[in-house]
Image (tube, rainbow, N blue to C red; front, side):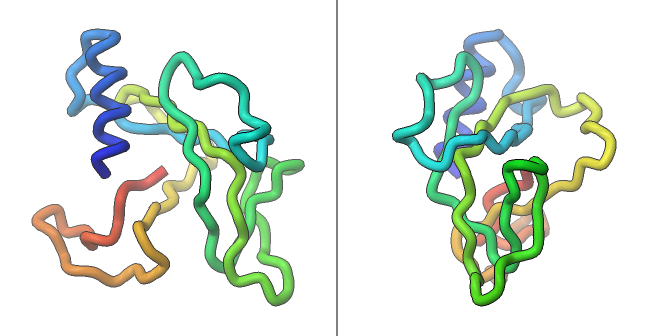
Length: 122
């Protein structure tokens, strides 16, 4: 969570925006790992090492797909977290996807009403 906050804070300072008015939009990149990834983006950050449970990401369709037979955890491609305006409308058909620290979705409920295991939604 600190990493995400620092990425938003860097964007907020660069463009003189209030940090509490920012959120991330995520874009899955066509690269599978950091070796294939170009230089860091001008805005936001790349993250890697995430996995999907019970589904996979199909790059050719740029969409989630059914998991392969016998594959419980599918590796994700590199994800570009792009800071944006909290009030900006999401594209049509956009669904928020929760991002957890571990594959156990349970956790203590925080004051926000979310599990302490939940990091954010993409």
